[in-house]
Amino acid sequence: MLFTRTGEIVQKLQVARQSLQLPSALAKLDRFDLIILDDLSYVRTDQAETRVLFELNVESYRRRTASDKQKERRRQLPTDTPK
Image 1 (tube, rainbow, N blue to C red):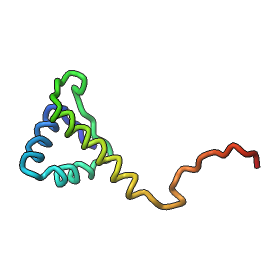
Image 2 (cartoon, rainbow, N blue to C red; image 1 turned 120 degrees about the vertical axis):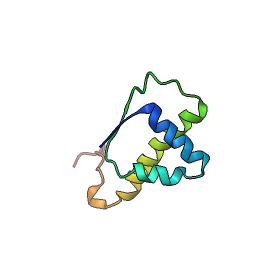
Image 3 (cartoon, helix red, strand yellow; image 1 turned 180 degrees about the vertical axis):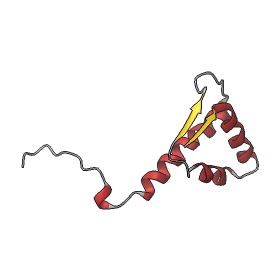
Image 4 (cartoon, one colour; image 1 turned 135 degrees about the vertical axis):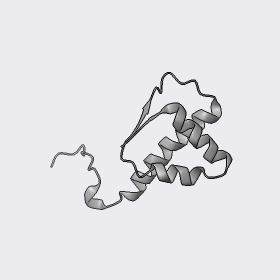
């Protein structure tokens, strides 16, 4: 679990983006099962900052769903037809 202020993680991701290291920074954050962003609603973000937060969310979701492809672990959807 990682607990961090939203402003801190945005700054780190912005620096990583500017130095062309964003994929590496996102991969490092992927090791956490849970990331809690404190003060999310209080932080004013510009478009670039919003973009890195969005990329963090997308990458986390993509990596988790891409690595969890075992058939027995997939959620089964109910069917409309009675059995």
